[in-house]
Amino acid sequence: MFRIRFHGRGGQGMKTASRILGTAFFMEGYEVQDAPIYGAERRGAPLFAYVRADKSAVNERGIISHPDLVVVSDDTLVGMPAAGVIQGIDQHTVLLINSHEKADTWQQRLNTQAMIIILPAKEEVEDRAELPYIGSQCAAAAAALSNVISKETFTCALTEELEHLGNEIVKQNLKVALTAFDAMSSYAGAVKESALPSATDYIKPEWINLPFENAEISAPAIHSGVTSVEVRTGLWRTMRPVINYEKCSGCWWICSTYCPDGAITVRDDKLPDIDYDHCKGCLICVAQCPPHAIESIPEHLAKEQEMAKEKDITKEQKQPGVKS
Ligand code: SF4
Ligand code: SF4
Image (cartoon, rainbow, N blue to C red; front, side):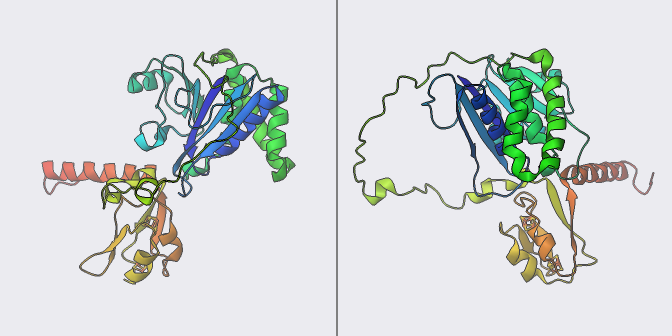
C-alpha cells in the first residue's frame, strides 16, 4: 500500500492535491482513500491531507503514522511541531519539500535518513497562503515519484477534479503540474510501497456493541485551565497586522473586540497593542479598523525589518551618537 501525507497551509490547495492524486491512483486501478484533516482554523494554518492506495481493499483508517511519502508545500512548516511534518519518517520515507534550499541543507537540518527531494520553490510571493498552483504541482510530483501513474492518467485526474473551475484554470494548473511531473523523472520510483502490516485481514463485524458510559467517562475532559496562552498561534501567521499609530484614532473597542483571539490589548495610553505571540494573522482587525490604521505586511518582510532594527540598535550601543 502507498501511504502518502501532504502538509500545507490552509489555502494552498493540499486537500485538492490529495483528491487529484487519489483520483489518479483510482484511474490506474487502485483502491483509494483520501481525506484532509484540519480544525476550525483559518487559511494559513497548518493542515494535512492523506492518500492511501492499494491494489486490494483499503481497510486502514485514520492518520498515516508511517508514511512512504511526505509532501510539504511550504518549507516554513517543517520545523513547526504543530504541523507534524516529520512525524513517523524513517529511512524508508521520501520527503518532498517545496523549498529554495538544497536537499543537503534539509538533510543536515533534520538529521534524518529519509531521502529528501526538493520541488524547486517559485520566487517569494506576498502571501504564502497563496502559493499559486502549488497543490497541482505537489500532486503531480507525488504521482511521478510513485511511478505507477502515467502522465496521461494524471492529466485526466487533474482535469476531472478541477473542471468545475473552468477550462482556463485547468490549463494553467496542467501546465505547471506537468512541468513538476517531468522535473521528478530522475526520481521516478523513489517512493516504494512499504511492507508494513495492513488491515487487509480485517473482518467487519456485523454488530458493535457500544455500552452506555456515564458522563464523567464519555464527556470531554479538561485537565487544566488557562492553557491557551501556551499555544503560540502567532507561529502560524503568514501576514502580520501592523498598527500605524499616527493614523490610529484610539477606538480600541473596535479592533480589540473584533479580534477573535483576544490578541489586541489596550495600553495605559488607551491605544491598542498587538500580541504577536498569539495573533494568528486572520487580518479581521485590518478589515474592521475605521480609519485603516492597521496595515498587513508579509511575515518574512516583517522579520527582515525587525532584524535590521536590532542591528541598528546594536550598532548604536557600540558607537553611541555615531550614525552610519
Ligand atoms: S480600530 Fe483602528 S483606529 Fe481604532 S484603535 Fe484599533 S487600530 Fe486604532
Ligand atoms: S490579525 Fe488582527 S484580528 Fe486577527 S488575530 Fe491578529 S490581531 Fe487579532
